[in-house]
Image (cartoon, rainbow, N blue to C red; front, side):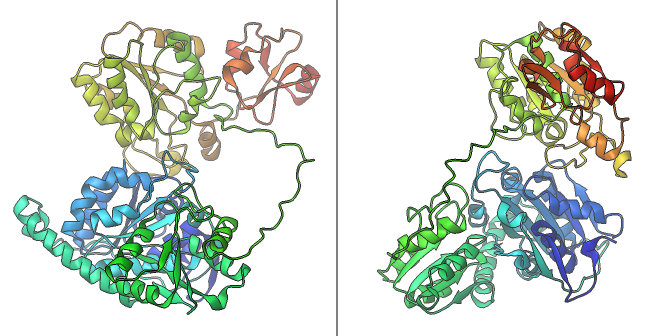
Length: 625
């Protein structure tokens, strides 16, 4: 039995933050779950992917976030409790249906998880999705700890059904990936299907209907405001003259700072876990009981600005500060030391930060830049494309493991803005740039948002080559399935969609398949696209070695070693490939047997044929001596 199905109310379970969210949804009786995987949210849908084997909950990895929200909207309109998860930039993809779904509303509770990523641990920007709550007019809850991740998820479903609106649950990386004990509540039964009640003049958003629905949304916002004012989710703690306002993980740092600075009796804390609509009456009460205010919120000064406006409207002249105090910045995530210093600076306290440990006598840690894994087929594909198109071509890239093609010695990533942008931006480069254009996109990303760009390229007769890196999984976020995946090793009974058939169906006539570890043959195939006028597509097919190992879909191959009797130390293998398994020791190139997966890429580019598969460990030791 999956641990999240433990039906023992009152028991404590030590779990991950994302697991706590999943448990909260289970306790709320969630019946329908959709997502597109994206760090830091990926472990939430993983739980339901695993639970499909022992519950009646419907779960799908949708092709992108827009589709995930639209699929979920249909289920919620029918009356099922629905969870939709994505990372913060995924809400950009889902924004089109989101804005109008706020008008239409829901019948069954719908919770939309937006996992923000301050400090950009795994993202292309660090946008603050609290703005989406304000833009759409939807309520937003922001848990501050592991227990609230579970409890507020369950409450969000109740709130959604009470208001008839989707509800945002906003997290951040630090919350998603924290671990801690959670008190369990009772599980609710799963409802399989319900009858959809037709009401087209409330659910088909032609202008006449939407004009009416906008008024309904505004009235529901008033209800949401009352809920944020009267519940116990938002709280004033303490009665001191120094006011601190915080939300999310930063609230924990504020509590630590107050304790460390011995300010307990002097402070009043305003905890905003139901952050939108802002509880104006509660906030006004808070502002009236303090002399000055410090707002501690990661990323944008949203609450700070709203409190300043509220104070001005009510004739309050107290100081309200936030960004610019101490290290409080619009950049990156906060930490306890930064917040402690900001509290001291904000209230003019004498505070001496602990001296840092003198580490001047300790050598710097060796640098470990991110790198493609040993045996990653993307490395081979990049090498082969470079042999044909050279360094002067323009290489738009996309989001996935292969984005690491940015780094030397590969250096084949020139432009990236979002999922699917490689194909569409290649259209622009093909028209505007003098160079050849070769775009790279992964298999999962191609289904996510590459299809429409390719239609555009074919229709407008653009001239470039698209390389689809098909490694048989959504590798970057944890090996989730996508429409092109062979589901058999995963026991995932969904219909497989052929990338080649999809590409040909979109009108691409010049389509080539390569096996990237067959180097010479792949280079010859790629060369055939060089003079082609129009859109060429190369599908590079080779499974991710980590996925193959995890699913045991390939027999392990013998690792390789360097035969130093043949090696002339040209180091092409080091300079051109930068495989983590290859290293230089005592001026000799060596291969780490424990890392090598036997892909043979290095052996094929070695002009002396000095890299060979090992037969026994003893031979490897002899050859590497």
